[in-house]
Structures are given as structure tokens and as C-alpha cells.
Image 1 (cartoon, helix red, strand yellow):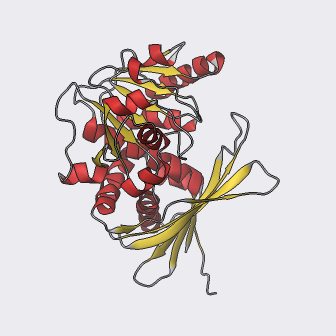
Image 2 (tube, rainbow, N blue to C red):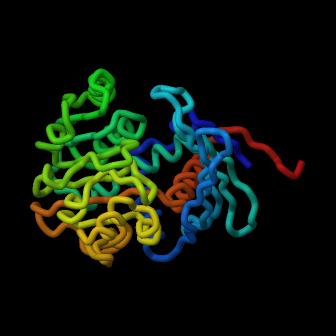
Length: 327
């Protein structure tokens, strides 16, 4: 079994390469070639955190495993981040462990790559202006991910803290070389955007349907529990709504569930899973005026596909620490 640390994860699976890994994973998911129990959370007594447990199987490549992630409230900029954990990868044929892989960087890469995949599938071909709502790690990851699938000419960023947002905008420009501006409001940030990525810890909507323009594509990434939402009912109702995995969305997509409960949309508002659109079994964007939303919750098939790709490359170059558990 290999133990693969963060530095090797970052090196072995850049986001641009991970997009194709996510493409295959989403197709396998929508074809029914994955077992994906709904994510479970365990509250940690006397501590500001919880443990998320995500087991699953994947048909191709044939593997199974589990992701364990500790989610703790930490100050902005804490080197540990809010997510610390690991992915345990097993071989399906022999039932033996293949790797233990650092989980926070793997999750960050696969999440932004999945958004890039959805953007590639749903956004207009000429989309070139991106609004990033949030200024944490996922927001930064998405600035790189969007450039993997579209020729991005401008970023506009927004966050609750103005000084932090200005610093984030400078960092985006420094790392991407793309003109970047900080906006004072979400409305201003999205006004000229073709693509909108929300990657926040918001519990209540910050993106409102009345501020959206025809032709925009939106990646909703931050909220992952039924009680939280980054976009309001009008945004959901105005959009063609897509998900990574329908069962997970109907259990935890706060924006969709809230809109259904209040009668803004019907139970059948989901157009399809991204894997269905790739396979041609669900329609994608049909014209340049539609607003499309991809609701990202993250599923174990994504983690397993990313883990298997990392393990394969680590095997090829003999990186990471190799240990014999039976020794």
C-alpha cells in the first residue's frame, strides 16, 4: 500500500488533467456503475467539528474505498484549512488496500475539476468572463479550473471582507495572469459574468435570481446540507438545473430542496446529471439565452476516480511511501 501526501497529490493530479478523470467518473455514476451511499456526518462532542464519511464503489476503474474528512471551524488562513482527512483506496478484484491518500487536496482538486467539467458541458462556448463569489481555497481553485475549459479574459471576485477580497483578487491575477477586479457587491460581481462560481460558507442565499442575466452558467459549490443555500428560489426557478448525482441532490441540495418546499419549482426540476448530459441521455444547453446551474455536492465516485488516478501515477514513478501491511 502506498501512502501519498499532499505535495504528491498536487503534483500528480493537476486540475486540468483531473477534468477528464471527472468526466469518466460522472459517466460511470450516471450509468449506474457506482455504489454511492449518502454522505454521513458525525458530530464531535465538545469540539467545533464533525466527521464526514463517504464510502463507495466504482466500476471503471474497478475500485472501492472510503473518504474520511474532519470538518472543523478554523480561522481564515489557518494552515490546516477547514477539511482534513484521507481517502482509502482498495482494489475490487483482490479486496486489498492500494493507497491512503491525503484527502483535503484531493477533494479541492476534484471539486474544482468537476465544476470545470460542468462548465465545459453547459456554459456557452464563448464564455470568457468569470465571477468568483468567495475568497477561500475553493474559490482560488476555481480560478484555475475555469481556465482549463474556457479562454478566460476577466475575473471579478467578491467576498464579505473587502480587504481580504482585494488581496484575493491580487492573488488570482498573480497566479493566473488574467485581469482581475474586486467587486463591492455580489450583484456587481455577476453583472457582466458569463460563468459564476459560488464557493462560500453561506447558510442563506447570497446569489439572487433577479441579478442573473440570460446565458449565464452557475456552479453552486459551497452549501452541502439541506438547510444551507447559496442561491435563492428565483435563481433556481430561472435555471435549467443539473447535478452530479440525483439521489444526493434530493437529500442535501439546499437550494433545490428549499425551492421545492416553497413551491417555486416542482420535484422534477432537475434536468439531469452531468454524466447523463455527457452520454446524451439528458439534454444540455439548447441555446445561448438559457441560464444553467450545476449543483455540486461531491460524491465518492469522484474521490475514488481521483484517488485511482493518483495511485496509478504514483505506482508508475514509485512515489510516496510503500508499506506492507502484512509484514
